[in-house]
Structures are given as C-alpha cells and as structure tokens.
Length: 488
Figure 1 (cartoon, rainbow, N blue to C red):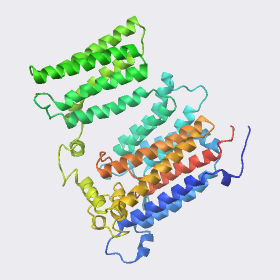
Figure 2 (figure 1 turned 90 degrees about the vertical axis):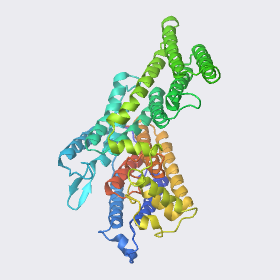
Figure 3 (figure 1 turned 180 degrees about the horizontal axis):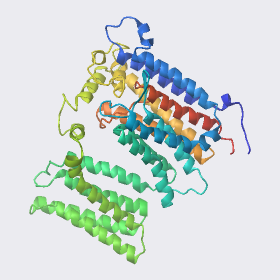
Figure 4 (figure 1 turned 135 degrees about the vertical axis):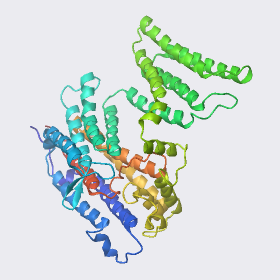
C-alpha cells in the first residue's frame, strides 16, 4: 500500500468547514427568532436545555464533536465498512416501523429517554457510503443492465423502508441519487423522462379544464401532446443524432400541426387533438420503419419514450382522483392554483408568504417579526424556517442565505470533482445532490412554488437528528477528501 499523507489539519478543506459553521450559526439564530415569544425577557433562556434553541445548541455541539471524531477515521474504513453500515441502518429502519410511536401519522422516531432520533436521517449517510463503494468496484459499468439495477436498488431500498414509516418527504430525497448516476454516465433519457413526466402532469392537470379560444379543445390535453412531440424530436436530434429522420418528422409534425389549427380556426371547426394523435402515431411508425430499413436501432428509445409518455398522461387523471389521498390532492390543487384553501391545505404557504413579504428589503430585525412571534406560521422553526429569515432579515438576508447555500453546494461539487478515485467522487456528488434537493425543495415549498412535502432546510431547521445527519455526511466527506492522494 502506498500512502502520500501529510498533516491531516493541513489536508482538510477549511473553506467548507467555514461555510458549514457559518450556516450552522445563522441557522441557530433563525431558530431563536422562530422560537422567541414576547413573554420571554431573558436572552439567556435561548441556552436553556428546556427550550428548542438550547436543545439545538446542544445538538450542534454534539455534531461538531462527532465531526472531529469522523475526521480521525481513515478513508479505507469508510469504504471497507460501507455495506455493514448500510445493512445496519436498513435493519434499524425496518425495526423503527414496528417500535416507533405514531406521531402525526408517521412511525419514524425512536425515543431514547427524553430524546428522539430519526433513523431516516442517518440512512442517507449509509446509502451514500454503499453507493460510492459499489460504483467504485473494479469492472463497474453503469451501462451494464445488472450494474445499473443494483445501483438503483441501493437507494430505492431505504426509500421503500422510509415510505413504510409514512415519511414520504424524507423518502423523496433519495431521488437525488439519480443525479449522481447521471454524473457517472447514466443516459440522459431517464432524466428527460422524469422531467417530462412532471411537466405532463402539471400542464395536463393545471389547464385540463380550460379550452382554446374558439375551439372546444382542452388546452392541457393539446399542450401535452405538443410537448410529447417536441421532447421526442429533441431526443431524436440530440440523443440519437439521426438528422434525416429528425428533419422529416420535424417538417411533418410542424406542417400538420399548423395546418390543422388554421383549418379549425378559419375554415371548419373540428377536434384538432385527433390530428396530434395521428401525427404521433405516424412518427412512431416512421421510426419503426427506419429501425428495420436503416438499422437505426436507437430509434426504439424514442418510440418507447413516446408510447410511455402517452400512457403516463392517460393515467394522470386517474391517479389524481383515485390514487392520491384527499389531502395530497388538495395540496396539488392549491399549488397549481386550481383551488384556494387559505384556511386548510394552503394555510401554511399563505402565512409564510405574508411573513416573507412583510420583511421588505432589510427585514424587521432580529426577534422583531410579528407573523412568526405571534405563531401565525405553523412549523416555523422546522420546515418553514425560511419564512423567519425573510421576515426578520428581509430580501437582503434571504438572498445572503441563498447565496451561501449555492456557494456551499458548488464547493462540494468542486471537491467531488478533484477526487482521485471513483469512491470519493461518487460520495461527494451524492452529498452535493442531497443538499441541493433539500435546499431547493424546502425553499420552494416555503415560497409556494413547490409542493409541501415536509423536509428540513439543512443546518437551519430545528432538529437534532437532521443536524447530526447532515454533519456526519459532511465531515465523512471532508476526511475522504483529505485522503484523496492516498492510494489504496
């Protein structure tokens, strides 16, 4: 074994540590603002172990102590013990389903004396280690069917366990690992499929009841069919790179769409959706003919994408009204502007927007927010902590937090890219993807542009398990990065 190691203190990326400490301190002050009430007069009450701020300060201290310990662990141990750690937390997660108390419909917390721990927060660390270890094994190829299936199974299994705990929000975080697979060479077809599915659902549901002016045609239905054609042509052009097939289908679809619309508007009204279906069917048949005659086998992916897209859209209405639970359906309708439920499903987001908007440019000042002090915003020190920042620190403070998170995530990506082996790179990108997912979804749902799924803002939302889990993820990577020049 060849080792190239200097003093560990010189190898640690102190810029990342500085960003971590800055976010942690800002997060603690945000929790102070969200937890403070006008009745309290002694500022020292913030450090009381009976208060949430005191508990968070304690967890911050524990997390930093654990972080120092993790910096002392050799990189080889992380890799060698990865699957043992993974199996342990999977089993703990399964056990949690049966021994945890039902808290707001969720069975995800294990009580230890006066404290509670959420194993799901630590399963992210175990899953990241296992995925990095598996992908870094000799001979791994993401384009190999079995390697890809095993890779996805590594993070879909804990996702299934967490769903069984009735923690849907925490489970969705594991979808961030698909970004890691994309970095490691996964075809962009899966990402395109995922993005297009979301677009089909949103456009189809949001505009499904609206009609095109002058025609008895659903805007949502027509728009989705157009999007299927556009996405398919883009996949054919940039994914398959079959220019001749692209040009022919582009011309046929464009001319057919415009001609049908012109005839329906200016000559005789008819259901132009029929034409879009005929154009899609023609495109599928043409691509299949090209597969047979010109050996353009990659066209099969486009055909599969088009058929899958139509099947998915056909199921959207059924899923919306027969699969989703009532509270889930109402949340989606409120998010899409189909329903205004300010006293029910839309209450949290509505109050959050009021709090953020009332902060103005510079904010009302630390501990001076009225919406948060009077407890108008539910979960204001956990999932909706960002509204406290917006009210007290205003646009300037909110922007500063957004910039800090952006710099922090970009720094993690930079560290991941400089790793000398696949294990470190995959771990780093997994870490960056998890932080990116949490940050984007949390801020988005507070602003009302993302569905409310209940995931914390890293280092800001109150919660010991969350803070400790994120710290373990980060400090483990800092040690792996410090050993990046060690050959094992």
